[in-house]
Image (cartoon, rainbow, N blue to C red; front, side):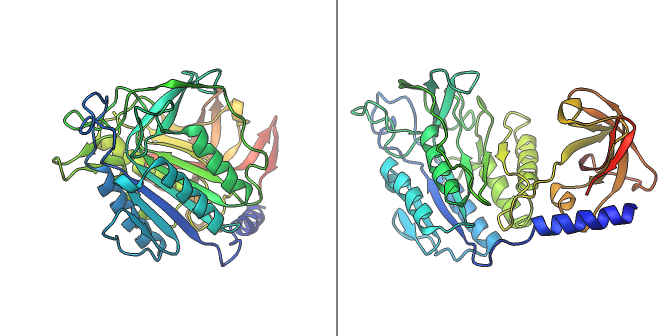
Amino acid sequence: MRSRLWARAALMLGLLAAPQGASAAVRAVFVGIDLYLHSRAREPSAEFEDLSGAVGDTLRVRAAMAQALALPLAAPGTGCDWRDAVSQTLINQCATRDRILRAWDDAIAASARGDTLVLYFAGHGSRYLEKGGEQASRYNSTLMPTDARDPASDTGTDILDREVRRVIDLATSRGIRVVTLFDSCNSGTASRDGQSASRTAPELRNVALPPEAPQAGFGQGSAWRVHIGAAADGQDAKEVGSVGNRAGVFSTALAKALVAMPHTSFADLAARVSAEVTAATGGRQTPHAEGALRASFDGPEVKLPTFAVVAGSNGLVMDGGQLLGVTRGSRFALFATTSDALQAGRMAMLGTARVAAVAPAMAQLALEPGAGAALPPRLVAVEISHDHGGRVIGLA
């Protein structure tokens, strides 16, 4: 019976993971800004400084993505706007608000259903007040182009997160997958580190906007979105190295992870980046990830529930309980990574465990015979049989 269940699971996952067209392409827009037209270096009354590591971050991530995904990116040019068949790179004075938004629109227009669009940004971030918004703090974030905070502008020319959302909604409504990778922060008091200029600017004070609903048609067909950000709200997006040779901790970890695990799920990519950044900053910076994390750059989203498991002195504790439908007696397969858990053959399974106790938000697992002697400290679980009040239901 168990072998039949695994065979059915393998068939189902194989169908889910099947490519959706050999012609699907990856396109990208890279933006990196160190020099701002209205920073304190040019306007003594300004409330923010230039940066020194964002352009370097952009070049490193660009090179890593070209290597990892075999993208035919042209060599960096001598100006500040580099283009090739699948990407556009804007740095410093070329990365104005209008040119960034136009580059995003052009990339969408050049993409077809099933393509993946990557939007990378390194530079200042800030925040603004949203009346009645979705955030508990009522604040949402902004990206700051090189012409941000123009004293002659009523809006400050930041790119508001609702404008980023419109771009994402437009792309996904056309069946285009979107990955946003932002190395900026939006806390008005955070800085990249104590000895460098802040990678954030004070709050955008003159914008108080009502909430805005997503556009109709969001996420048509196979489209999905993924966002991985450098830091949680209120945290510093740090950089290391001497002035003039700085590198963002997040972008450095991201570039390394892209090269090391190019075909992995976004969940595993984000987990590796988060672990490295958290360790490097002593827990003061924790990257944030959301969206279709079970997808990858070259694969569709596999709609299979997975659960994080921590193996420690108290046994196996799973992040998921009664509120997510986990029941006592149900059984789970254990894997080292999300990518392993989503494999059709499940050949990387490390063992199985049964739910011994369940609370609203977590469950205690009891390891079953046959598991490896030494399990990694963090695991990924997939349910293989569900105990429904004493009635066991096999899952494929």
